[in-house]
Image 1 (cartoon, rainbow, N blue to C red):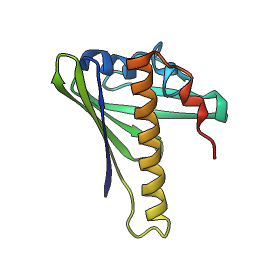
Image 2 (cartoon, helix red, strand yellow):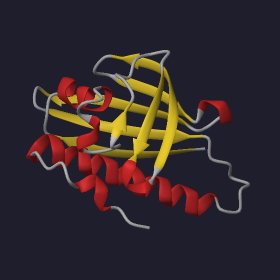
Image 3 (tube, helix red, strand yellow):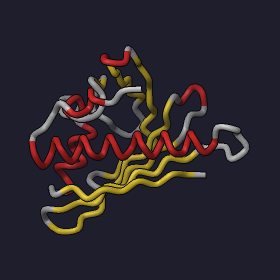
Image 4 (spheres, rainbow, N blue to C red):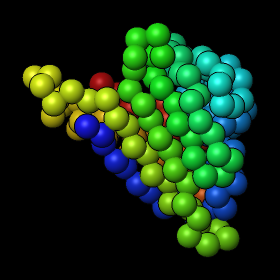
Length: 144
């Protein structure tokens, strides 16, 4: 089972792609830090300083300006995330995020899907704010 979230960002596909894979940019909208540039075959350490959280991803596939596929917590068979970049024009990109690995039999299945969708909408909103308007303080606004 997978969950799909989409958002249009009024920037070139290459600029949207770079915001995610470049560790100097990702802290402006998503994680507070990324250990290195996202490249196929690498294991990346991601940190949320505000929430005292550290996690790892295994980058499974990257096609420049088109797609990123990674696995959360690779040692624990975590979910697989696919981020697809679809150019709408020279200055507009639709970003699709699909996360799979949800268990329909889990009693918390529905709340997991809702929480997951909420998280991706927030991340994409922060990305849009950063790239279109230069806002880099949104990512720390999420509370429990």
